[in-house]
Length: 148
Image (spheres, rainbow, N blue to C red):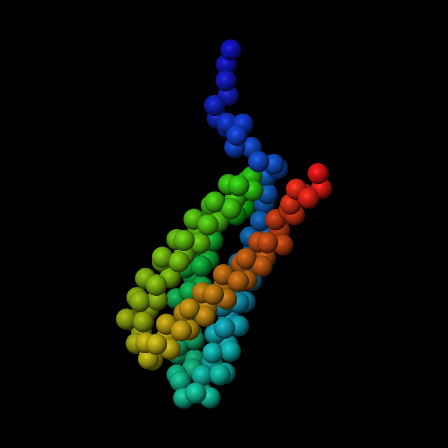
């Protein structure tokens, strides 16, 4: 009697799911770009440094977010339970790498007051996360547990 140990039966949770990863990447760029654009327009109203802070925040957040998203390898079809776990791991990696990239860019460029830069980075990161979640959530199948 032989057993297939490559994929235990307890790990098969429905059909594999593929995420629209290109749409997610464009949504992340649009969200981060929208925050940078709004920051550039609104900042002069409060005597803040506008385009420098927003452009450096954009450069700090977007590449890290895109690389973190590509680490997930979203083009692979995976069961929902695996997909969510890998997606969460990618999000944690981005959460840890974004402050490092931001510190490096701020140290090299000296782009205005530190508090404004941190606020801009936080707003850009939050916008990319919201846009990513919105696109991914529309691609996941609905639960049918209520239809028993």
